[in-house]
Length: 54
Image 1 (cartoon, helix red, strand yellow):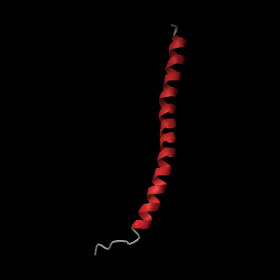
Image 2: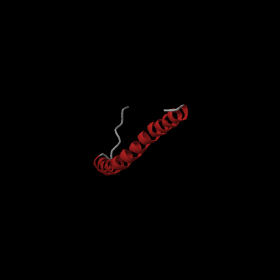
Image 3: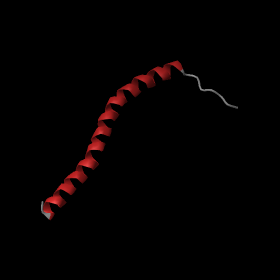
Image 4: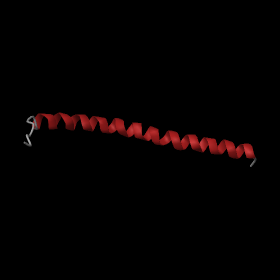
């Protein structure tokens, strides 16, 4: 393997290591977003009073 092949493989691995976690985070955030919306609606309805700590 020549020096240029090593540099190319290093660059490809760097890009993959930076891009793939971002894609996974975006995909997981989309799936958790729908769960958060439904739980936010139920918690808003059930807890409409604001507690006073004074």
